[in-house]
Amino acid sequence: MSQYRAVEGVVNDWHLVHLGRFAMGGAGLIYAEATAVEDRGKRTHGDLGLWNDAQAEALKPITSFLKREGAVPGVQLSHAGRKASERRPWHGETPVDAEDLKQRQEMPWQPIGPSPVAYADGWPVPTEMTVEDIYEVIAAFGSAAKRSYEAGFEIIEIYAAHGFLIHQFLSPVSNKRADGWGGSLENRQRFAVEVAKSVRANWPEHLPLAFRLSATDWLEDVLELSDTVTISRALKDAGVDMIDCSSGGIGGRDRPKRMTIEQGFQAPFAEEVRREAGISTMAVGFLWDAEFCEELVREGKADMIALARELLADPNWPLHAADQLSSEETKSLWPIEFGWWLQRRDRLLKKLGFR
Ligand SMILES: Cc1cc2nc3c(=O)[nH]c(=O)nc-3n(C[C@H](O)[C@H](O)[C@H](O)COP(=O)(O)O)c2cc1C
Image 1: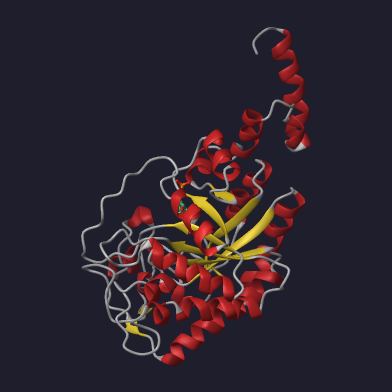
Image 2: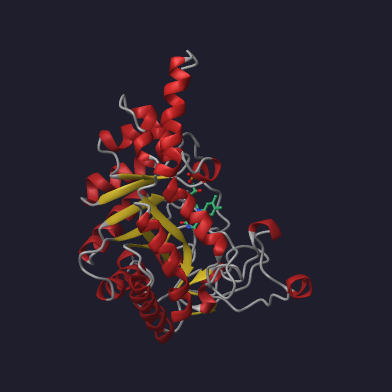
């Protein structure tokens, strides 16, 4: 989850505490937020980056802490494309302009994209990427993968969802190219596949590589679930191990299809991709109930589940879930500095008849 608190792409104590408390709360895998592979690929001025060695070096104490506390540290490599140069959510989630320069000494910058099509009215028209630009960004993903390993991460997820650069290539809403990188689905998915190959070549074979896709654009006849299955198969052939199935975010003027938001509303995407593309999947979005999440995995609808906002509300959610789902004593799963006391308190509460 982006915190928008980095300075020049470098983490600080905030990120250590933010990510560290999820490890203390029992999370198995903790992804650091969207991390830009090049400066112009940041979404906001507060984004993390991995385009230089100083950024990688600063991440080492965080990955060490997460590992020491029993979690797997993951990183999400990203390029914002036409959605770059954006204000932080609490500053409006609109493009950076002269006002930001006045208030925060933050300059706007020129975004790039597959085609000169703005994200929405009032957003900058991105500079259409040349073929040289395309290969430069593909190489930047590879270099960031190498730095991810040096920084101590054990899983990479490529951010190809929510309207960011790779999604912009995948979706006909934002990709109007007439060359080999646009048009047919095979051409539109080429950028994603080349990024996967570049990362795989710079990331140890034994470590997993995941992709986060928007399984549907929620628009009529645009990027549909059946396309996502095709893309997932191509990514699997390029060395990708898992698809994290989210949705939406491409923008555009079409009317979004009606969607019903209920617990686990994106989980059917993870189920379909898992079955049809024969690849591991992660379900995400509007999940909070431990029983519900357990069932998704038990019934083979997804291999993993991801939580975002519920973990902001309760960083100890995994430990509480273990307690809810198990008949055994689970306080021994807590860090001993907490669990030792809670175990004793549980016994006392039981003895006094409160539990
Ligand atoms: C504060 C915040 C920051 C987020 N940052 C990212 C991000 O960096 N990368 C990403 O893929 N999704 C990001 N998301 C989306 C979440 O990963 C998740 O897909 C979404 O919140 C739905 O899951 P939830 O209902 O468990 O929150 C963010 C969400 C929140 C609330």
